[in-house]
Amino acid sequence: MNNDIRITLVEDHDLTRVGMKTALQQRAGFQVVGEAANGTDGLKMLTTVKPDVAIVDIGLPDIDGIELTRRFRQAQALMEDSINTRVLILTLQDQEDVVLAAFAAGADSYCMKDVSLDQLVEALRVTNEGNSWIDPAIARVVLRQNYTAQAMLSAADESNVVAIAAAEPEYNQIIEAYPLTERELEVLQLIVDGCSNAVIAEKLFITVGTVKTHVRNILNKLCADDRTQAAVRALRSGLVG
Image (cartoon, rainbow, N blue to C red; front, side, top):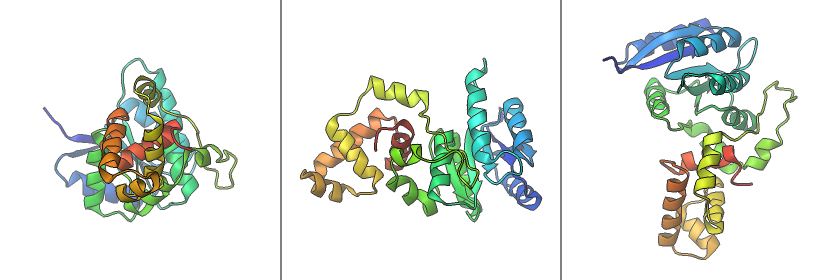
């Protein structure tokens, strides 16, 4: 049985797309099963090819990568057969509104185009496993922003990037089933603000050991593997703000 991660590429720049395809096909464990040069063709491809991970550029010539992601997530919800395709945004843009809009639209991971091949491979593997991979260059953007700022992004922004302030249903279900305590919400907000355990302990007048216990409980309740993933899920579901 072939366990290769099936990849599709949605990128309008021919040399970039061909370069990624060639590089990934030379790595064991990856198979490029489709490519498109614009958002319209990319959306059709995602719904028919059903890859494991779709690499999507934001700056597409027709519908941008964020709008493509939003439409694909809507299409996924309407399909009878389950599609578990993950979306990895690959772009040169690191503006706060763009980053947050991408995650709000349903992107799983966010990579800058100057990422090394080894980092891209790691990002694809992490994303395929159902986790969020965030480029270190923009991780601070995600961690320091709150959901309120995201909801205020305008869909008519001059950048033509569409911001979607929607929480994913599974996160809401998790939160309803395992609600966070008031103290856990305070700790979560400080995690999103980028505070270390020591700083959180100082701000809340509790011990570092107690902070670690709260963090562990938060990760368990949000089904998150680490603090970064918990922060992303908190932003998407509106837990902090």
